[in-house]
Amino acid sequence: MFTRRRLLISAGALGAFGTMAACGPNADSGDDSGGVRIYWWGGDLRNGMTREALGLFSESHPDLPVSPEYSEWTGYWDKLATQTAGGDAPDVIQMDEAYIDSYGTRGSLLDLESVSDLLDLSDMDEDMLETGRLADGTLVGAPLGIGIFSVGVNPDVLDQAGIEMPDDTTWTWKDFGALCAQVSEWAASAGEDIVGLDFLGTDAAELGMWARQSGQQLFPREDETLISKDTITSFLEYARELIETDAAPQAAAQVEDAAAGVEQGRFATNRSAFHFQFHTQIQTFQASSGSPLKLLRVPARTSGDHQMVNKASMYWSISAATTNPDDSATLIDFLLRDPEAAKVLKIERGVTAFPELQTEIESVLTENEMVSLDFARDMQAEVVRPPLVTPTSGVGFGDEFSRLAEESFFGNRPPSDVADEILTQLEGMQPEA
Image (tube, rainbow, N blue to C red; front, top):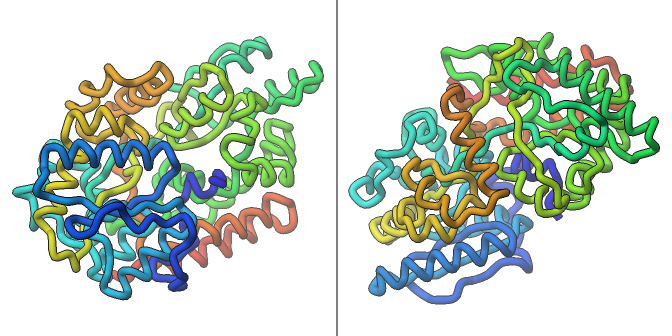
């Protein structure tokens, strides 16, 4: 089951080269032998789409055999770590933001600029491409698509409550909290099991957003500032205020809902007006709820300063140990840039980072899928520089933050005390200069 935490922080608690567990029962050892081995994780929809796209590749490249390997998220990283440690890594690897630095800095991923004659990324937005680089500038990941942290809204719930759609270009966190409390107040008087916001306060992606809006970062570059204790404290206090004003449920109910799985939670079952997620996830909620869900900017600490960023949804990387670098680059280039492949893959892995392909796929997208594409396009005029990818030293921060934040969340410790410990954890996880 995919919980919200897995979707938002991509299992940041796991070490890329952690316990070398045997590959799990969900693993697929491949359909063919020889050629380029490509390995990815995902659900049944992604598996089917990817295999269809690989079929197109085989039709146009009959002399270049492809051996697919697929796993659900459970077991994916254990298997990859085992293969990499044993010198048997797949040639082409679907890579995640939480792990790319871990694998890259250990020399396990190929410099993609060494195969730039076959893998053409020149038309990709430069800031987006930068998210695939290590601190030393080595390009080890080709971003598959754009994911933008955003607010999902259920217009039907707002209509029932008699509340107008908010102006997300100007709203602040104070406005947002008041609006969520208004929804919850209406629901209580109407006898409806509905809340304004389902949950907020224990996820590192949320803290990262709050930090950016404060002019800070969780893992700053040399020209950026580390998040301060005051900023962490203010975030924890805001999360408590949402509970105290009934804008969001009590802590235990929020934690339970967050663990329920995407399709069983409040937002997916029309029982909350708002929900935070990366924007392409709205498709899953649309399908589960049957409602015309929309996307909004995140509220701002200072009106108008949302600090929206493009996050690489995931990457294609090439193993540094591959014996087929040219063939691997050819395959990735096809999956990223071929118009027919793009129409098959659509935006399941995120909105393609190649603008010309966004136009190509419009004809095959549903109305719900266009919500994600249109939002990504609209945001490109205002997105700011993406944060540094999670360094190897910081892979475990997501779980550490969740553990500590819950102590404030449940009222067991003052937010200021918890903020001290969170900051200490972060300071100890900063990469060495």
